[in-house]
Image (cartoon, rainbow, N blue to C red; front, side, top):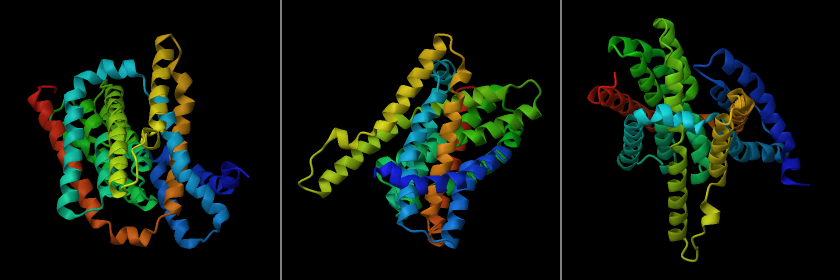
Length: 340
């Protein structure tokens, strides 16, 4: 029996959990399906016990289905559109990503927070929330509990940002383009960027900020490529140093699913430049979102929520520091470069 066939019961179990969470996420986008799924999985993990028949499929979903979700995410990226709008925002994007990663590294060294959690929170805060964590976790061989903790921290500050940023933008007298850049660079997850930009458009007639904020956010998503490659090489180097007989192998460390993510983006760009309707790729984007929800359900099922709560103080503080640094950097650079 093949691995996929023997994993089917566990995959189906994750699918059943993910379906209502996906529907709930559509109704309450500021929270989103992945958070509902990971919470549902954590609750079920405390209430139920299952044998190896289900566990194999749950593990498969948390690893392989998660990687497939990242690949399909590439179909949402039109590189020409990203280049057209995203280049002007590049200084802010690079600066916010850098400050978040540096903050995570410093806090890891000072507070002795586990390396994987610091990496996941730093990458999730700086690039694109759950999607970046989904891409990074397999590369650094993060445990499901570490992924769950990082996703939970990112979610907390996503919700806060989506709720307060429109009012903060008005208080600072940001232009429509300025708020789009602010939301796109300082809010982690796409759903929360959409929620904040939609709220801004509702407050300001004819603003049309949503498209600008979304493209800035998609430009940030491209940072998944260099970050995951760097982490893959670092992971391989550390492994080789820990085992004197180990030799470096590019094939073993290269995150091929990230390469397929890039190829999907290139295919989307070529097709749309040749006149194909962008709506053609919407089913792939939706399937990517659903697979992430399935994977989060599996991660929740593999997570000890009691241990998560007991060890949550430092990760939450790190998430807060990254969030504050990104927000401050985005606003200060816009002011310095006179982008608002």
